Image 1 (cartoon, rainbow, N blue to C red):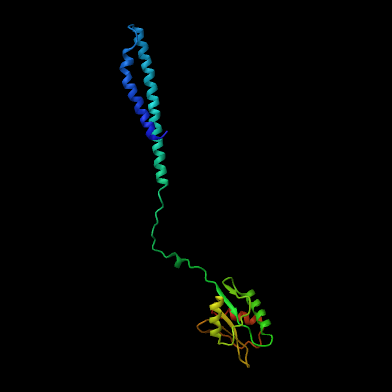
Image 2 (image 1 turned 135 degrees about the vertical axis):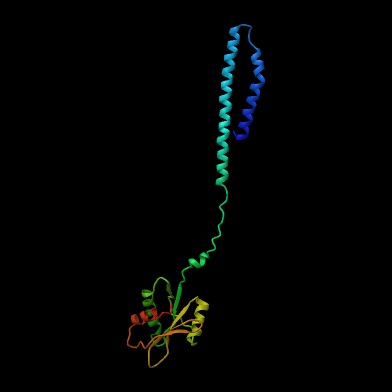
Length: 202
């Protein structure tokens, strides 16, 4: 039963009691014992009505409290402007993608694959090495880096400097050559890869 109906029922009971009071008071015999019986009956009826009406009002108060609690709970959360740019405070981790251009020479492809495997074993979690050697034509290192970025989404391109007298490696972006190693003729692939990863470009 809703609060509205409980209140209405309580008011109806009170009205019926008030209307019937004179009628019940005027009934009964002419003896004194009859009046005492009527008085006792009215007392019990009065107590019963008080209990019923009081209970209905008590339920009404409880129901009102529950409805207020529901209203409070269903209020939408307010968005508070803090003025903080959370994207700048916690920027997304930037993943670097690195590719290796096919090294020149008769065994260039095999050497490049070995170099890629060594880079993979040494690179940190923030660097991804493209799995296959890239044969991007005979353009400059910058041009090949631009093609690698355009077609494969690569950030940097590792290349071997074409010099007959020395063995050097470089790192290029689509804009410029960012780093060139010293002569690596006397070093193995592991040393060359470590030197490249410690270049400071990444």
